[in-house]
Image 1 (cartoon, each protein chain N blue to C red):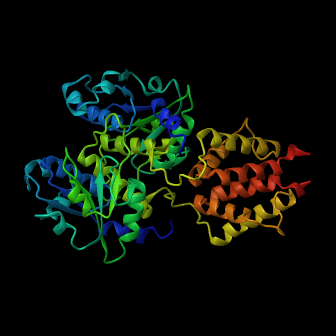
Image 2: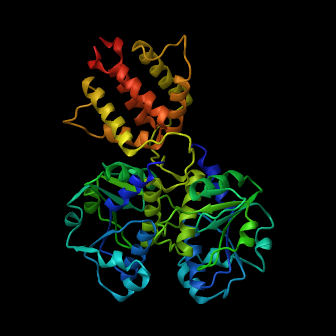
Image 3: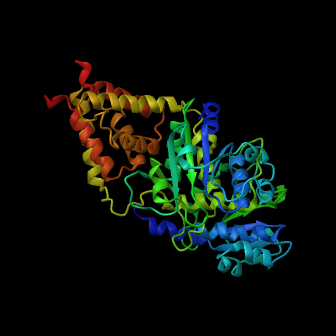
Length: 246
Length: 246
């Protein structure tokens, strides 16, 4: 995640749309949940009451998000300038649109939110969610996995979870450790050569009949994206296991 | 994640510990956040006020979680029967313990919550979090990535995000590659045992002086989330490299 700055920039191109929120307090709590995750673009479709004191009270420091919120008469209007709208749904419905979990949907949202392209995350009413007609305006449907016996995720909590996944998708996950030395491509190549050498020595890998083994290992360790310490551990482990050692 | 039933069972072995919550309403909201994600074991360390009407009001249907909550005089007492305690921290501190993001920590928690083994997720006070002394009782520290300019994640929201990650780690996400044979927690444990065995045999790992080696490898391979084929390759490679082979 070296390019995390660019990725976090994408958060500014993500819009949270609340359709017909009934309780102003939930709007404020949603604004707070957004800001904690670095989101700032809030749109409200026919809120029952807004602005409202309860919204400001629950926003608790996210007043700037509330103050900049746009109010719209229809969902279409709220998402008119977006290249993609993702509709949240409490349960997996049968629809013609792809249904993704919050993680995959967040990845898609961040990927699509290229410079100049906005993506909307659409949340429905507190009790009844989005109507089928509203969901039809959303080309991807997002479902947050919950306890089937108690799926009582409130509006702000849903915004919190989706906002968290958006921030993670934008690259905010762990390579936090700023003192950590970066792992260069050459270091990864060194790891793969090391694997190939010791596995050739052990007879597990035949360089003349390579098949997919090394490609598989590359894919696995690229996905793992080891940090410097982990790389050193793997290299040390391979050295200790090298059949040529004795 | 075909084996999702077994994995979701692990949620019953995860305990949420709230240390010195100051507002009873937050206890109720945390209980609700837990139940939505299928968690039920709540422990409270010196809550300022409990039971309380505000807790019950905010629990909103999660009264069973509140009613079963255990109150303790110390954190040590609350986690005494746990094999692992994971402490949440708002910011990345310098500690001797591994610092994981919520995703990796949740994976570790679910992996360790084998039958008969409880794992605690420990949350601190609303304003000040956990003390260093309390964090010292937690062998892994968890950090939720937030907006550095506004890290105002409230207690129930933190429980919501961590609970969500625990549910995802337990396999509640969308079945992504349904044709791929599933990798169960036990398979990952088998991989870690295999690493420990061959590295003990090679002298690289000293089980009597374990330091962080195995935890590092766990974190790396949990993050990589190998599929069945990759797991088989790793196991085959380790077998071929086992110093005891000849």
